[in-house]
Image (cartoon, rainbow, N blue to C red; front, side, top):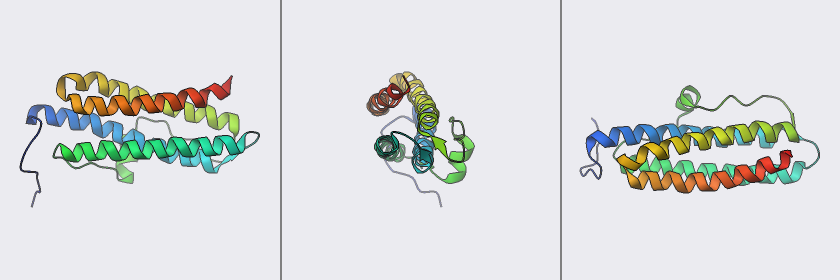
Length: 158
């Protein structure tokens, strides 16, 4: 039995494209949160505490954003997919290095993944304007917050 919402708020032709864009962003946001935890747990060195806490803030933002994106997908009448296999198979982010990392290396690696996530969000924003302005607005808000986090994270690399 296939469950489906009775009332569609977006035409079928644009809904499938919109959901595909949102699903890509969802996977990246979930992976960003997971990779943030990997960095958070395995950091060593000067500034450990401040970066450890800063990563928690970004992880919380990514998790909240992923929840909003997933709920938007379901609002559009499709199932959001945040299963581990989907994340591993579809993420646009590079795999985070294993092992213990210096604070500087963790900042650099995580900033790269944060920038890649923002790149995916911005790509989605540019495509969604014609398809679904509500989804576009959602991604704009998420991107703005993550861009601020990227600024604060990479400012420590100077």
